[in-house]
Length: 93
Image 1 (cartoon, one colour):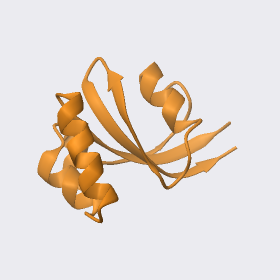
Image 2 (cartoon, helix red, strand yellow):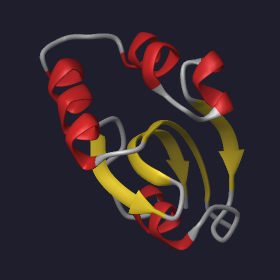
Image 3 (tube, rainbow, N blue to C red):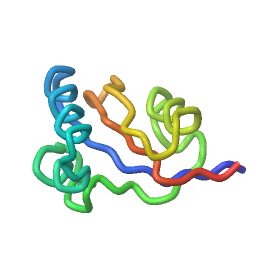
Image 4 (cartoon, rainbow, N blue to C red):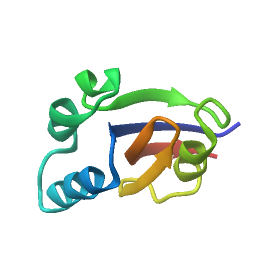
């Protein structure tokens, strides 16, 4: 079964999500941005979610994690919780 490791940043609006993505793409550290801005408790760990398999996260999040490019900041991804930036740090088939 596939497994992935990812980290994410959760915010309330798409605008905030895009602004944070721009900061990261301009060189800001993902973990620092997550700690300072994410509304998810994982923000305290730099957004790290650990290892998980398909179906363990909400559908929209899951689809991006298991199809998106590893090492690239993906999003905004809208879920029932808000808007996410996602970075897949590793994935196995």
